Length: 163
Image 1 (cartoon, rainbow, N blue to C red):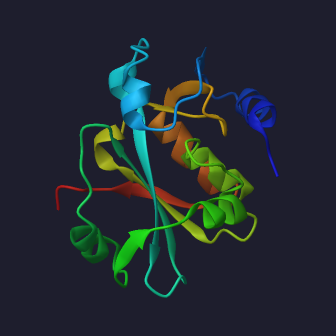
Image 2 (spheres, rainbow, N blue to C red; image 1 turned 45 degrees about the horizontal axis):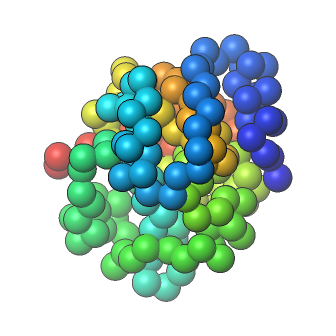
Image 3 (cartoon, one colour; image 1 turned 30 degrees about the horizontal axis):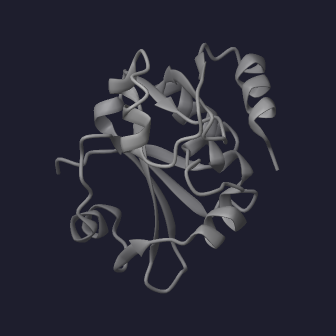
């Protein structure tokens, strides 16, 4: 299982440019916005979802101001009915704790069970995500993030939430 330092070292090894900001622990996107960090409009909101049979797992990464319609997402993902996954599943599948949900958690998903879908509005843009802990944020190119996750075996892609 990777930790924050290992993720930052991986970004360095892969020559992925990023900017890191340390901050107090945050547990919601609202708390994150109250920090007024430079580039806060690029910080992503992350939703960890599962289907009703607990057979399919999704991490949806979207802009902070967007709301997710689970019925619409079900259709877009071709999934069974969706609901929010619990903290135990978050720890078991992605090695993350509540408040630290991040697509970088897919690096801990050794079985590659979690499908990562990033809002297509981030395509060609910078995205801000936690580096496995909610006491820091890294900004990097969303395209680099998807490339990295795919390189390490994750099903990561953009999803057009406007469809």
